[in-house]
Length: 131
Image (tube, rainbow, N blue to C red; front, side):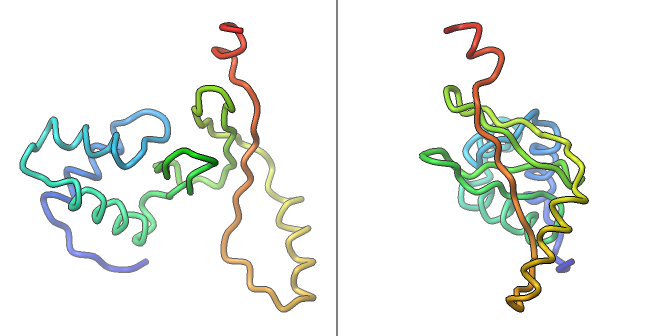
């Protein structure tokens, strides 16, 4: 992991995301940081999220469709499911052995697998109740 300097702003950003539920956007993290330390700018929060991702402390979930990138503090290998109606993202714990075994097929193409994501799409229970 890349070594980065620990600053007060980075610590506040880290603590904010660790205390949030779910998979917040950068804007949601900024709002949480701003409540604690109004002097920390949005650009600083965004930079700190990127630094924390580079360090391997959090994971960025690239935007899905028209949404924003989201951040995940759960670093245990897992997949995600997204509700097509409300956009909420859920952790999905599935066995990884079969997925990684199939990925070895790419060895024939001399492909170096670095990471992978599986996003399941559907409708969450809250949205189904509203329908």
